[in-house]
Image (cartoon, rainbow, N blue to C red; front, side, top):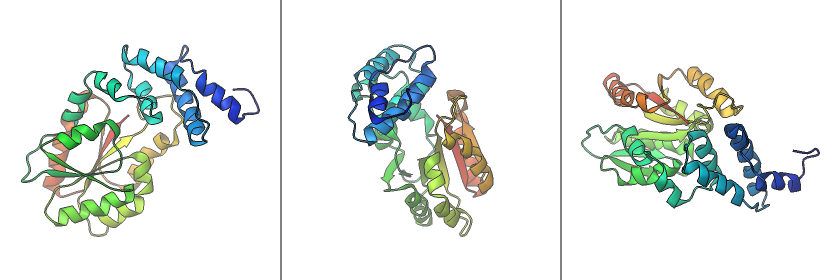
Length: 240
C-alpha cells in the first residue's frame, strides 16, 4: 500500500483484492484492511473478494481463508451449506455424553455453530451479552444442578479474566470451557491474540487441552469426564 495511508487507498486495497502467490497471507492482510474500511463506514465493494471466496469454496476450502471470510462477514448461508464436513464436524466436536438433562451452553458468539448447537438434543444454548457474564451464569447453573459448558474466543477469555478468577479460584467452581484460539493454526500470524493465548492460560494455572485437528476430537470426551471425576475446572483450546 502506498504511503501515506489514506482511507481512499485502504478502500482501493480492499476492493482490488487478489490472493496472489501466498493466499493465506493475502487473505489475512485483506481481512485487516477490510475490517477497518467497513468499521469506518467506507462501504467498500467486496465483489472481488466474494469471487475469490467462491473459488475457494469450490476448491480446497482451507480453514485459514474461510476464517478470514467469516470474520469479515462475506460468507453467505448457501456457501455455508457447501462446506465439506461442516455439519459432521460441528456435531462431533461436542461429545455426546449422557446427562440427566440438556447440557447448558453459555456462549457469546460461535458463528456457524449456532444451528448445530440449537438443534442438538444433548445441549441447551444460553446466550450472554458479553464474555464476562458467561462465567457467573455457568457457576449459577452448576449450583442449581446443571452441567454447563462455556464457549468463547481467546479475546473473550482475556476480557473476562476477572470473572473467571472470581468463579474458579474463590468459590472453586469446576467450570468447563471451550476457547476458540484465533489464528493458532497460522504459523505466520502476527495476531497478538495468538501470541498471548498460551502464556495467559499458563498464568491462570488451569489445566487445558489443545485440539488442533479432527484426530484430536476423541480427546474431548476423555477430558470432560476427567474434569467431572476430579471436580476441577478445565479449558479446551480449539485451534482455529
